Structure formats: C-alpha cells, structure tokens
Image 1 (cartoon, rainbow, N blue to C red):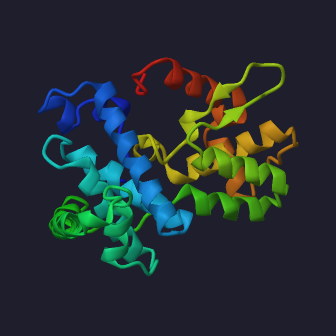
Image 2 (cartoon, rainbow, N blue to C red):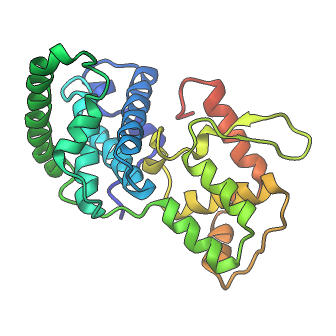
Image 3 (spheres, rainbow, N blue to C red):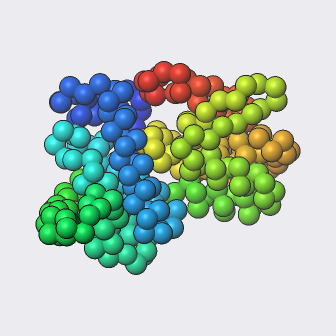
Length: 262
C-alpha cells in the first residue's frame, strides 16, 4: 500500500486545515506558492526538470503530515530543492540554493552585510528543516515522477513528437490550455502535478498516461490501444482515461471552484 496516496477526504483533513484552521483554499494557495518558488529556484540554478518535480513531491508530501503554520513554506521549499538535488544527483551546493532563494532581495551594494547575515540565517534554517523533512518523509526519498514515466511510455508506443511535447507541457506548465474538438479552451490545471497536490491523489503512471493522452487529443493524433503495453494496460485499468472529456471536466471543476478536492 502506497503511504503517499490519499483520498480527497483525507486531504481535507491535513494538519493545516484541521489543527490550525486554514481553509482548503488557503492551504491550496500555500502549496501553489511553495511549488512555484521551487520552480523559480530550480530555474535560477538550472536544475533538470526531474529534480524540480521531485522537490515539489517532497513539498506536497511534507504538508500532508505537517502544518504550514508550524513550518514556513519558503524555508521548506528551499529545503526540498536542496534535498532533491542530493537524491537526484544534481550537483548543486547549499550556497547555490541560498543564493537563488535570496536573489533580488538585496539590490544595493551597501547592503552586503545585511545580505550575508540573511543568507547565513537561511542556510542554517535549511539545515534544520532538512532533518525535519527527512523524518517526516520517513526517509522515503525515491520518487517515480510522471515526467520520466511519460517519456518511457512514449518510447514504448512510438508516440509522435508533437503529442509528446504537448503531454510534457501538461505535466509542467502553470496554465496549460487545451482545445478538444469544438469545445472552448479550458485551463488544464488538473494535470499540473507540480503546483497542486495531484501527486497525492493519483499514481504517477496514471498521471503520465493522462498527460500523454491529452497530448494525443490536442494534436488530433490517433492513439494506440494495445493491452500488451504498459500504456494499454493502464488505459484498460481506468476506462475513464479513454475519454478526454473526463480530464477536461476535472480540470474545469478545479479551475472553476476553489476547492480542488470536489
């Protein structure tokens, strides 16, 4: 049994909401803030997307068990990046993460002393948070990211490059948009497994298949259904995946209602 998969009801009972009185909307905004900060730091220090994705998963898993009121989201986001760099063997130093985190905070040269003090505090806090993060995650640091799984699926079924590129966009972009048939454009936030805690609701392989499937839909390519492949087996495991409208519907539910758990 996967300890990191939750029901929607369970995600509405996380410590930030139950113990500290945050609304579901506020809790979700905190998750989005932390995930976006992780992506910003990752961009500044030129991390591979897989490392960024792993850091986001750590962030979402941590706050499934701990509260935003107890542990600062900014410090934890930086800590998740630092830990993910170690796990995914992306050689970045703690000083690199701290420099990216504090980038632009001190623009004037006469603030050099204040900048040094602030960066020292950030470094010390990240080291403290790292121990807390490791313990909360039960040292379970291996993450199967849908990004890599999607590439493997694409190779298995020889998916067209344009469909793969569209699927990759769905897996990463902040506001991906799709157009299926004659329907209107809808924000595909549902498949953004980085900003929102989709990784806590769905198996990574399911997310990977869904992203690639939407890539087929948007590029109007015919997709294979072969039960002898991992792709085909996953589709038959959840027939609703065969209907692109299912995912568009879920995206619409999420984007039109603050409560993404409905």
